[in-house]
Image (cartoon, rainbow, N blue to C red):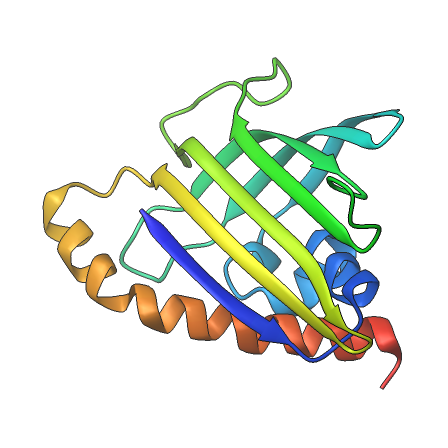
Length: 168
């Protein structure tokens, strides 16, 4: 399980777009940016947007690549705050992408992200994720020790994505 929070010094709408827009995400996320990402379906009902997504994760040289299919539900605005968003992702399936031997299919138990404007140019992002990347116990210990590095990489990348969205 990975949980973290950060303050990103951009407007909440910029941070949300940098985090969620597939084309922007490919430009800053080192893992997701090297493989295909596809929004297979999208529905909007009031404040709720539901997307079915396929994500291919390019792994370092010695590991087999991974993929996942997730249902992403987004409430915007969330609760009573006009400048906030809640996003919850869960595991899903789709006949277009059946599980294969390679890439190895990941499982998402839960992924949740909460974005909130805390100032005109500041956004608080809280993230909680629990997924099985199918590495086995040996690699799990190594990844657990590197999770702080992954969080730093996400925050640095997200700032890069925000610059792209903001046109800076």
